[in-house]
Image 1 (cartoon, rainbow, N blue to C red):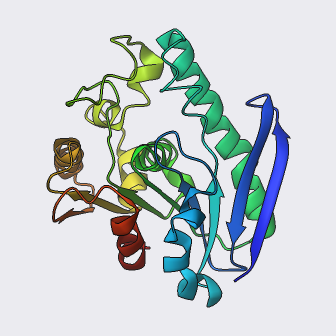
Image 2 (cartoon, rainbow, N blue to C red):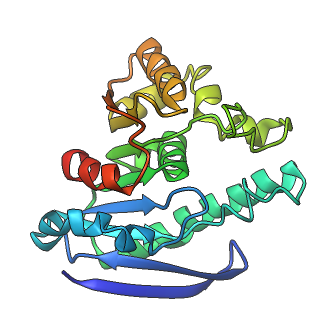
Length: 242
């Protein structure tokens, strides 16, 4: 299995960023790490190993991106206005730096957005905001409104709300989406959500599913046994849903 390491100074984030690429051809997967995770987590946790056959066969090429969660949503020492601003910079990094690199390496037009835990939020949010760029999105164990508290998972914006927050919380902005062209673009995406029945974010997934149903957007929601919020389950999920 081909493996490449890339590192460069990001003008959008004003810091060096790293990523790993696995494979040589096929649909491109932008794989976002779990909350506060790193670009090497999925390799370390053998999630990439679970995809080895599809990668080696040339069906998938996986781009494991890094995160800045500790500088954005999990940066409790900064004002929440800065947290969402840093997230927006991160999205620009993904769209203006990572995706062009992926397109340069691999001309396959199919791009999949995927992630686990907070990575599922990143994957779903970027695909819903830019549906013309993606053919598929896979959200595993995700949370789709970071302003809602659940147990020890707190509101990551500390009660702060503005337009930037609103337009980056899928369960908020999709509910009021009326543009038929955008709805059609989202409907063209193969949308897969998967969540454990004991996961604290179960309700968040069903809220998103209900919004999709209200808008006539086709999607699939799979409920797994137990909490299913760890690498053991994600290794199984990627084999089924990627």
